[in-house]
Length: 607
Image 1: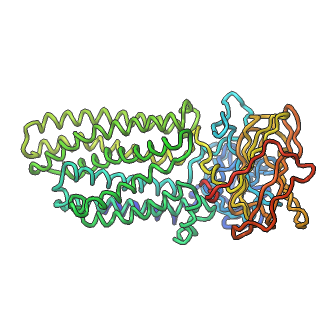
Image 2: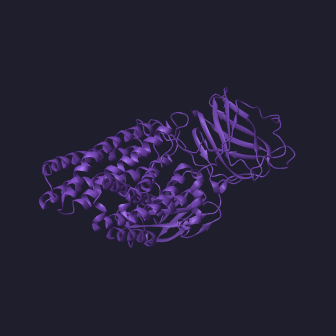
Image 3: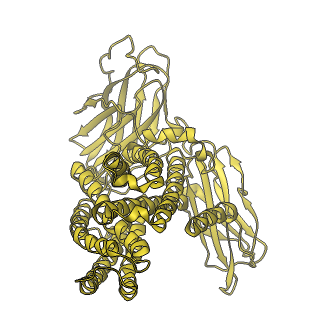
């Protein structure tokens, strides 16, 4: 209960007091936009004016919809009180909620003030037809989004993969992973080696407290995930009606919803833990927390060998939960004091089944590491954090081996747990459990970064997909639309080749003949291999059903492309097929190796 109170208090402090600036000198006097402003269009510049002179070294960052943005260089006014950021030469801010955080210093480098302002943008930064583009780093191979070679100093901007998600999303994921893993591991220990566990009031209180933490974390995780996926504020995402939209956010979104339901059902087991050893209720009582932990392994479904990745991810989540969860119960409850022979059996049982769980955890972890990161362990945020996790796991293994040796020595012929033995084992296994909790925290943190080899998970979920290959210029790209119906459609353009040297890339969509609808033309800000994507809030407006024509124009280092594309069909708003069939390709729009595929699922949005 103390842990629950601490968690709730921390969340309350974050929600209520997170925006208060520090009471130092150089306080913010005014800003453009001001805190709380709702802007119709993205600002062309941002100005921060302070009540005293500030120093030349200051830190300002803007995150929109939980994603960091590229900031222009600051310009300090002649009176050293105003910082100006001109967005003329950088990508405009996207539609949604933006948070600007600042830390400034005094004229002599002394500590100044910190704080943040929040403002909203109602319309997409790109006017007709209104597309917000997110550019990923050039991939090393088609269908990957690894960062550009470090030797290319002029490689374009920092990859969005390197940016952690928002604080509530990380905190919710951490508490959810922590609570569900410990509950599942605790139930495994009770079933395998400590059937007397539910008779101990300390064990029952421990399980209920951990479930409350898991439930609070899972709800916060779903809320923050919804806010990130829909580009809305955290407060608006607290409406449960909004959560169902996570079904359109790919398997990670569906897994988040399933985790919430399964976590709620786990409360049925926690209320009466003896259900896990009762033959009449054991199967559902174990199946619910097992599936809840399995959803953690579905949070990363992209990358090479995706099916192997799903199996390895689920296996890694379950094995890690068995290892660390049972260890925490052992250190916190079983070894809380001296006791009868059942406590000795619990320690011995943990030593037996923890070994295979450790082996599975390590093997599946290595599979995921080579599948998602390859050799990019030092060049990406995901890889560097993974290396820290590997070090902590190695330290945990060393401490765990020492604890097991102590247990074997003290309990070799013991028939009960004496006070000295309980105290010594509690210290040994307690240290290992603390390291295990750190590992769970690092595992949750890894989900805030995109691995080097993870492609866009949703590239196969678009209703319309057309490939355009021009051998003369070397241009190879894919244009995707979803849902492929009348109304706003999500647009994604993926350039596979060439890796650099692309300019003037524009995709146009010619309406059916006689429809009276203007051609939709959208510049794509890609200069090489990468992905440009639209948001759900500002899709491409297709106003009529029927046979549309795709035209692609671009210039590469080996030639120019003009009008390449092909025909495709936009269905009626209700998904029905339009009356007229697709007609011939209009003159001036030659088709070059174009193909169309249809997917039964809707497009998804990655948070």
